[in-house]
Length: 440
Image (cartoon, rainbow, N blue to C red; front, top):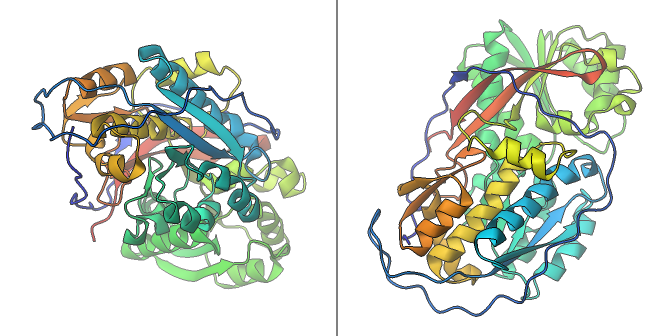
């Protein structure tokens, strides 16, 4: 077991190109139900944690600590099409962990509706003392909207999907942690691609919320740092419905490329851009991919053909090698959007509780960063659990790759797929790129 390592520094962004072509399957229909949660008895009260052992050494054997986790997923709403991608990894984690120690963990799901009101109501059932941790909600803006409730309840919330830059701020410490890499990493990487493609005058447009604003500004800053000119840099109201003025302003700016950070409203923006005469190169990211279907672009899928972008890797080359096959066998029809990150989130919470020898969030929160860095490497949950119970100081490198949590409880590095849209919204994947948190 190890002490809190929140002193870890933040590192400058870089790019590494990796070989391989990856395919993420996209779910095109909404799903309103999830598999029934595994049920266990109420977690037993645990004693205060013992003195930590030095890294790599063995202390007295520890006891298995039960964890009951509540997961907010989009059973309805804009992101319901990926509900299996984010719920089935948790069911798989439960099955794999309980195969090592029966009834060690349980998960219960509730709908976040991709809606602040729905999530705010439904999360209260997980804050009544019956759960030891909360996961989700999926979207950054919805996650931010429930944060005060979670923090006031002294609950730990882990996200495998919320990439918003705002969560890197110290006001979310220590109870908010995530395995989804920050848009402070993805923004500069996508910005570098825009410039490397030879675009000298760039427009950057984003939905004005927790997700869009941080991503858009990080991307625009990177474009300027790489020597290009940002000729348009604005957020928009995601509820506007019509974006004719935004489209006309982008065209009038003289940009030869546009980076668009959107959700489903990006479909209407694409149509309005076409009507305004836009003929430049467009770049998008995961929020666009997760939400854009044929109907959101008015059937004009041809308008999206040729778009380029980045997406948190579904099967990172630096991730645990067997996860993809194991997940495909466990949930054959599930898409894989953020599945590795969700799985890792659940595992990290479980490992932290074992290291702390407590399921009290106020106690095990100090072990979360420590189980992701600086100890003895492990990647499979069975191996990691046995090491922790033997008193070994571990460094969990998971399905989504090395986590190496920063002082703010988030991955120090991120791995991303690059893609290009083809006909009928088909994605062709290229090389993976990797970046790290910026300094400061």
